[in-house]
Amino acid sequence: MILYFFFGLVFVEPSYSKDNFITVASTTSTENSGFLNYLLPKFSNKTGIFVRVIAVGTGQAIEIAKRGDADILLVHHRKSEEKFVDEGFGIRRYDLMFNHFVIVGPSGDPASIRQVSEAEVALKKIFETQSNFVSRGDNSGTHKFELGLWEMAGIKLGKDAGNWYRELGAGMGATLNTAANMLAYTIADRATWLSFKNKMNLEVLLKGDAKLKNSYGVILVSSQKHPHVKRNKGKTFIDWLISREGQEAIGQFSINGEQLFKPYNSVKK
Image 1: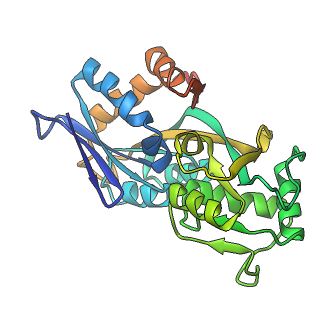
Image 2: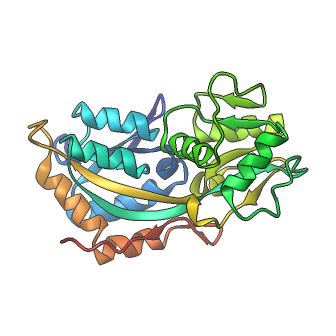
């Protein structure tokens, strides 16, 4: 099995067959954390089906799947996933796994959110103190989630948000690096945070709020929209992911002894 890395895309290429593979459009968090490198060989060894992964932000992954350039969509923004299915691009969304987002910031905590237990309250304090905040600004699942939190907090950002709020148009790793250099707050998915090496003075300052739940779904792209989609192989992949074996494998993945994703133990209806 050969891995290809090209402009943010990650391909898992079969070493002996050009046809016996599927393509999965997924998020950077599943790839950057090492999760896919851990999980996919288990599926391939069992079925003989190899997996090519295009690892980008959720928004990009959805557009790739809409064009029919992937057989499977595996992302983490439920509303966007449900819209994808409702518009006929996907067959059905399955709950796959979840973890939580965290709010990270400088150890000095200028907005004093360390003792806060609710994400909306933390964002209000960041806004009120005009403390630096960096946003991915890339239409990813994390970016969409962050914008939803500001909305729940009753804060309108827009072009007049002020210099304290910076949209980067970048991935999670680059956003965390910028936050560290600017002594800024940001929202990160837990998987990327745990695998991120350059934490410098950044700390997790808020976690555990139920509203920070980060759910991942998996969808088979519609072969009615795109007849070339590998429906049977894609279905085999999803069936394995939501099976007891697949769910147990998901639950066993960890970094430094910390479980990264909790399986949903989905049951097909």
